[in-house]
Length: 114
Length: 112
Image 1: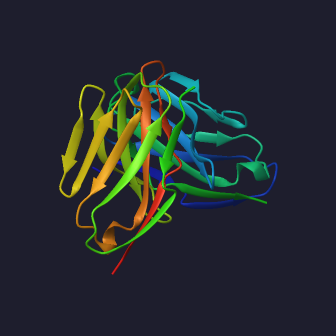
Image 2: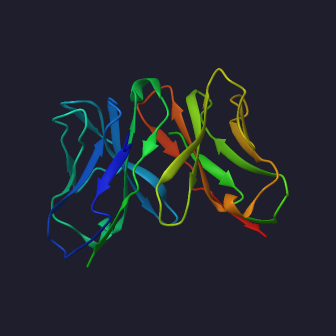
């Protein structure tokens, strides 16, 4: 199993540009989520999904969009990048968020917005 | 709203020492608690998951305990090694929502 994979590893954007961060898992997990990690702020939840076709907002959803058309993939879209979105983004998955099983994390995408 | 804190923020110990990392949470109505390790520039690796009905979990040199009533969990690392140097995070899932709340982490350095 590859586990949770994320692409790209690094990205530099200009203010106002849009892009999609990719996340995929091959463990047939229903639950997937996106976090951002900032110095001094810890990990904060952006969006999550409890299954294909179902998504919901986390703590810091503004400026981000998600969709879940398949069990395997959960892309995160930045609609119009801002310097405040400079961060490290992590995708995670688990068997079922409602039952709180063990979370598995991807390696992260380091995003810089200039 | 659930809040998670970790003390100390950073810790430096000589190789071979036993050490304890602390995690505190404000709402005791938790579903489970998970400890992670994060190496610099890397993702999070799960170490131990404790369900609310459990008091402790062990994996190798690691032992995590949970005391829901006092809102605390500890991660005990026995006979520390330089390879244990990393940031350790705890995360709590409560009974109300779908997601985990993370602590800020403890940065551990084990000196040879």
